[in-house]
Length: 264
Image 1: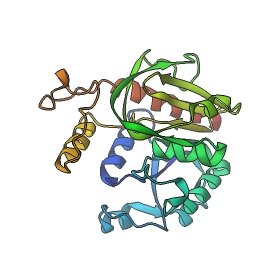
Image 2: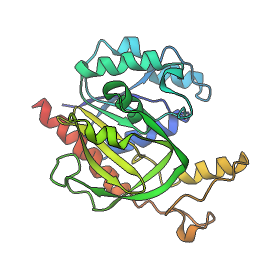
Image 3: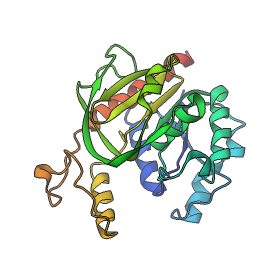
Image 4: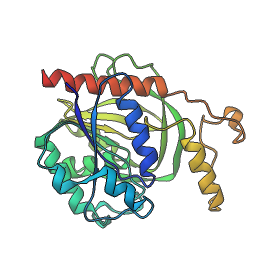
């Protein structure tokens, strides 16, 4: 039996993000039935209209179904307060729906920040400079089924202008932190029953994703810092090495295996 996985794709480059998550979900792990969900209160500016029409389902049509897994991606709206985001009300409705219609919801980057804020009142915190690069993370509970088998430390790309209120997270009895580091802060947290999983970085990124972001920001005249621990010899002319792919695949396998165990 295939698992039904829904993805609310809030990233600007829809097609690339779809491919990244599809690769991880279908990495010889499961014949996942993936449904792409689109907002109805926001029309993406950079996605081809015909692509959205052909491959995406409006939330109002999807909500009548139940899903084994649900992914909420990141979104480049960190500069806004959550309530200022134009589709915030609809996103809140979707997050409420997921509580009773999804076995496990995986929230990524800004999606994780939004869910932590909405469900637990944990605020996002602006960073003095962009956290960008590939950072080693420590596993804090190696026996947990979500992170079992991951290297310790394991590398993960980060690309964000904000973090979360770490003190509030650790004070929340309903949540547990599974991976973190001094430079990054929390990377993986989850509810006790793993029905909600929050990942602050981008385990789904391709090897060249940070390079494309760096080039984009250079072309905009933003003078970005070279991503940490990414280009060999810190030289943007060198081809970056994907040092996180193995652990990313295993993390998604663990998440899928957890969902399967709940379906039995």
